[in-house]
Length: 363
Image 1 (tube, one colour):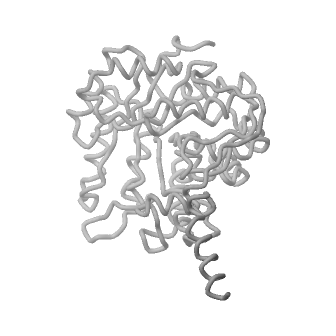
Image 2 (cartoon, rainbow, N blue to C red; image 1 turned 180 degrees about the horizontal axis):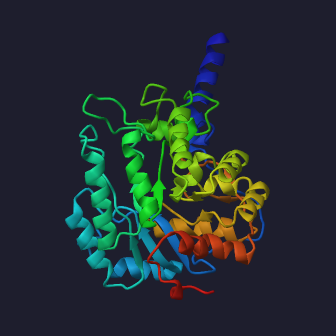
């Protein structure tokens, strides 16, 4: 009898995968059975400026297909933050020349290298480069997350974001009237233990290279504090804090930072899922800080923009995000007022980023 029972249990266990009773967490993604009004938007209600995009091939590529896709989305202007790409001033020059074939449609930011920061002439050279790049047509400076995380000096030490040797660069941006769009660190859960309490567990499992620790490269709060020190020390420079400053899950704290640093703006690239899971509080936040938040996406995947439009524009309930590993929860629409939408979509960027043709947009 015992042998028969054991065999029966084993047989049931073996057949479970066929019956769909056994699966890993990453496989479990059932479609909702909820029947509610749906408004899938493939085009923004108002023309918009994407202040956070990367087009490394702009220096030589044919942009006609890109412009056609932008038109479908109602994207009037794309800001290419990678003007220098991974090259030099010639790459920036060719990017700007290529962009001129489509008047008004592209704004190009420049980039700087922290290699050789130990050289006493590094700041002088970098400031001169900024002046030349802006004269050439660059409209801002993009700082990658490598500063504060991966960039090292000649002794192998991590270059801190608030390193005093960089101070002349921040001041020069203020003097030139260009904003600094800065990405510092990554989401805080990347630093937290990878266990059942980490809501980014799935992302870290599927992309293990994103896992960090207090020694790889430094504590999260340390990096974030360095960024805030720069905002504090350079009040005449406009900073666009990328990805809601990684405080999309703590809008109360983000609001405190907005109050503390009037020279700090922010954008929603790659963090719309944070807003979409807290529709009431996020709506209140965006209405309160409607003059300081801009539209950004971060990656050029046209079909993903509809999630952003739907969260910002509709009152829809419980719809999926486009990357489950990024956010396994569902989204809700914020149903923002038209004037707030206009500010996020284009008016705030027009205030902060030079050389954008305001005639492309409604008043």
